[in-house]
Length: 237
Image (cartoon, rainbow, N blue to C red):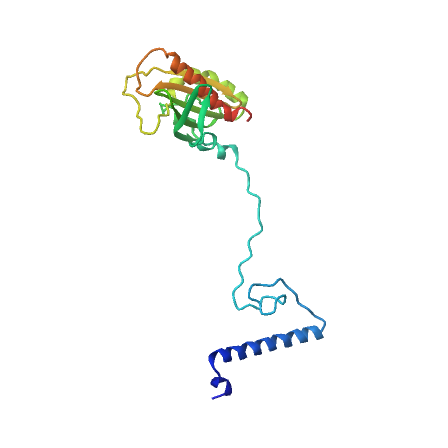
């Protein structure tokens, strides 16, 4: 057996390392004699920093060049959570409420009670979102439906249709609360507002779905305040 085989393991490794270093330095000498220097960015574990990846460990893959994220289109960003976050408190004057349901969609027929017809047909409705607000100090629930149109002119053309067919739009109920029995007409205060190229449909009822032909002042005041809350995110758009 050779002399190296009789050396202890640690010493054997040290000898091997010295031989590897001697070889690398001989390469450096040859390159220097020929007037050639190869300098690169050091890698973790390089034996000779600056001479390229001499490490026995694999180098980490280089991260791709950073690219600026493309901004969302209006259609992509039009959703209930973006405009009416669940953790936000909703207040206007004496009105204080919390969001208790949220939903949205691209097909404006989907938020109408009768899915076989579309009261907004040919009116360029591009999407909708619906939320439920529940008052903190009164047993009042409010459904807010926001309809998005191509431009302010299209929204203005749809105002009359939405006002005439307000009852044809679904009421967004708080989570866990179901619609009243068929034939029951809950007391309600209704309001439709034009805000830029959006329409807001705001409807307030009592949580117990009590019936009535005309809204009282509590429901009317709730609808006015909730309508102001509904329009705020869209006033400058």
